[in-house]
Image 1 (cartoon, rainbow, N blue to C red):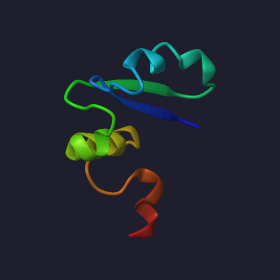
Image 2: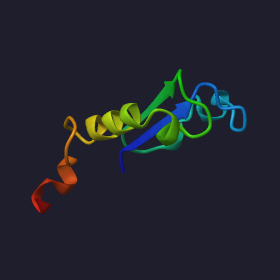
Image 3: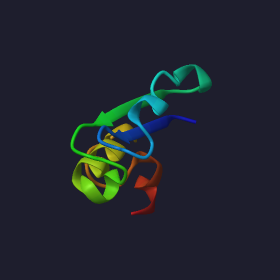
Length: 72
């Protein structure tokens, strides 16, 4: 299963280093993005950026991910 990790660079609870260099633990596509303007709650702190990254990871821009496109 493709995996996208979005980690807030200013996260003081789960330090960014804790999610670094983990690609060997995944058998499918793995992408980790550190968000410089986010802390512990990226979806609350940078919601538009998080949404754009998730939809982009799913193969499209804003709108429904490819996996849900048939549900329109």
